[in-house]
Amino acid sequence: MTPFARSARPARAPHLPAAESAGALVIGGLAHRYALPGGALLALDGVELLVRPGEFVSLVGPSGCGKSTLLRLAAGLLRPQQGSVQALGVPPTTAAAAHAIGLVTQQPGLLPWRSVAANVALPLQLSGARRESAARVGELLARVGMSGFASAYPQQLSGGMLQRVTLARALAHRPRLLLMDEPFGALDELAREELRRELLRLWEREHVSVLFVTHAVREAVLLSDRVVVLSARPGRVVADIAIDLPRPRDDTLEATPAFAQLAAAVRAALASNADRMEAAS
Image (cartoon, rainbow, N blue to C red):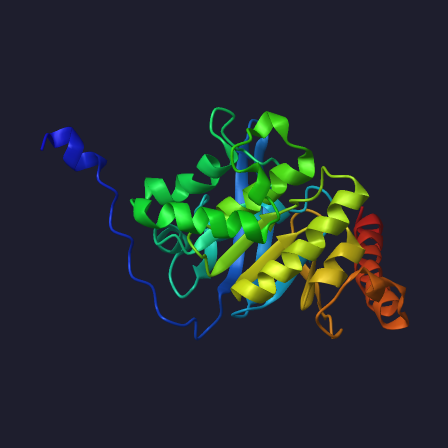
């Protein structure tokens, strides 16, 4: 075996705790700054956040409040400058190396020269799980309603179909923590409704913990166990609202008084923070 072949062998994934005693995602005193030509920009300041095992938590807030930055820190794509982030009981980089974190963004990021099946199989192939690949890919495509499109290519799919494939790819390694950054933001309302239903079904089956970033208040209430509201930049947690609605849920829930009351509470938290920022300016 050549030296190059030895270096190309997939690294063994680190061992993770069997259970997250403190939480699936635990963030404490988190602050993050970006260096700009005119000086540092404080994006997040003193953020405290807990996602319990198996919980679905949505993160809402005004544009530019640091929601995506927080998600990148949780995924291990950025390192905390101040405070702490623990994913599944370990630093996010360790959890990501163990394939225990799934990430879904607004842009699908599928490789155009690979088929749907090949795109979903890519994480498994990169980690050396080729034997599991075919069966797992077939299972995932069935779960997201894309079984008939395994041989199709990304350019042949609609926006909603692309996000289904992206979700399947993120679930390839059976992650224990799923991070979703406005995954339905670019879709029309009908496609969003369909994918919300599919996401809820997948979440109930996979028993995965979810942190879901969205601008849509009603979407956050429909999906979540809790909705966390961030202030305008620098992002701080200004409200943590429990969504005590029965499950399983579907779109008919939006017509109930209980749903309307919770959506109003989230909007009130957003509006109250906007009023404080306006007064301070």
